[in-house]
Image (cartoon, rainbow, N blue to C red; front, top):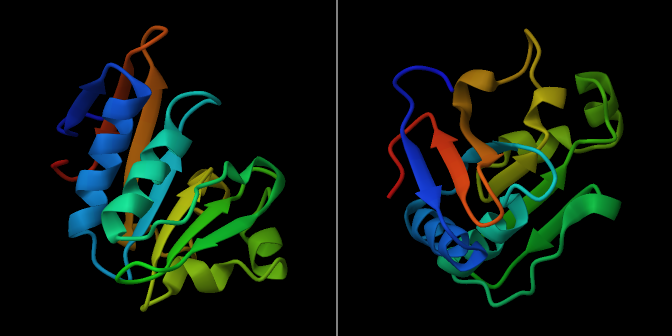
Length: 148
């Protein structure tokens, strides 16, 4: 974990959702969150809570088989991207997803954000959240800003 980065431990999927919900309540339109972590590390549970925190009642789906899920019905749209199958920034642009990494009216949650990051990417604007499985129930979530 990078030094100086705040870390939160959650002890259940519900607790991970509550953390996402809390961050969703305060997140501003135009924000991009880059999510990284292994499969099963809690990213989708976090997104489920985040979408609820923004005020949307839409059901959150894992983006495993889709590049993009859009959740409306809250105070602003939430764009949930999965960049896993797109290996370069050029592939992301070719798929038309780069517009969601700079969308002033919505909030973007991008899994596998490392696929986008390159010298020309807007990485200075991306708020990183790193998810790590500690044990069967515990997740460590590290963020480059203090979490609620």
